[in-house]
Length: 192
Image (cartoon, one colour):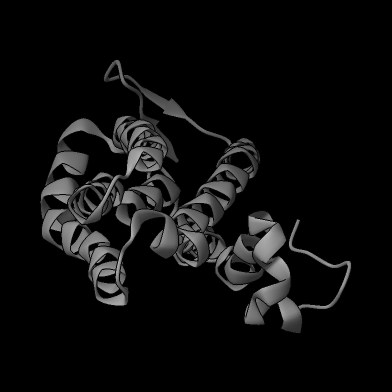
């Protein structure tokens, strides 16, 4: 079997070496994506944990909170397709780096929320920043690998989903005892 190298030359690749390379790359990529998915979910649900004190501190109504929580998905929905178009133009590694940087900056800026307008704007921008994260991670899992290993890698990117709610509740700390997800989780156990 031969494969084309970046210089245009063709070289024979040993299937055993190729499989070892795929295995090594998978063990470097999948843990990163696992952690990134858990952090993404914690970031999404953190607003529900912050609601306990945020409504009183910022004098927000339940309606304002609900609209602000939903505005995140509006930004995510509107910018999903443009994000995917840019992903295919600049590449998954570069695009995930951009997503992570802007996402973390906007997450940090949410501590400066003063009222309903800033809450809406920051939640919308957070959705815009996170749009394209899932397709970019799937693109990384599938790039450069054979079909069978690409399917395995894509399945591996779904691993964090069952661990997300209990992990998010545990990371909240003090409010964990009031969380229904945390109360149903066995004491002393965790996903990590």
